Image (cartoon, rainbow over all chains, first blue to last red):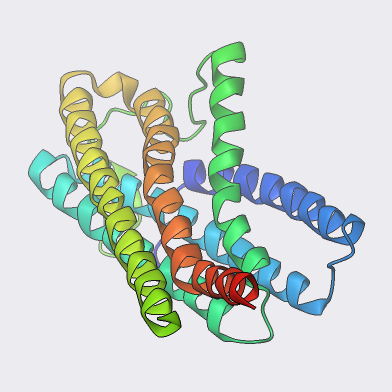
Length: 155
Length: 94
């Protein structure tokens, strides 16, 4: 099984935490305006989970592209990954729109939550300065994958 | 006449959704370029790999936001706007 890079996990946890906060806020808004029912909750769960999964795969693709060391391959990989993730999100939004058990507004709005979380992250980076990943800090940059797909250093 | 008006509304919504999704092309190209340059930067300065990757994460995700805005607008134009506009039209006529 492929090992998940620690930077990806760290960023995904950060995004997941903020998506939870934003989701709670959205549920509260629906409650306040009197439009809350179980479809709002289901739609929110569906698209919040999809947003986090999409972000996780973005991270995995970035690590794979950067580890390859080949700019042309990295470019193609990112374009393909972006197209697939966009289709995935379109599929999720389509589910939310077509199935009656999901509220369309509660499905569509949380798609943007991971990006809001990253805006907060970028403000934090601006205020506190950039941080280095604990795993790849001081990395030689000659990372290679062994036969199990695990990233290891080549000295 | 009402059918024609409804047809124009539906057609305009579909056209708008299609045009909104043009914005989905940009993030793919942008992310590809960013990662390609990051690969070159890591090749030149391998010791900066950690900070380059972390910055790339945030940059790529923010670049993708444009595409997601377009996706959300397209979905709303396809599934929400036609019903709302037809309802407004029929209530205005009635």
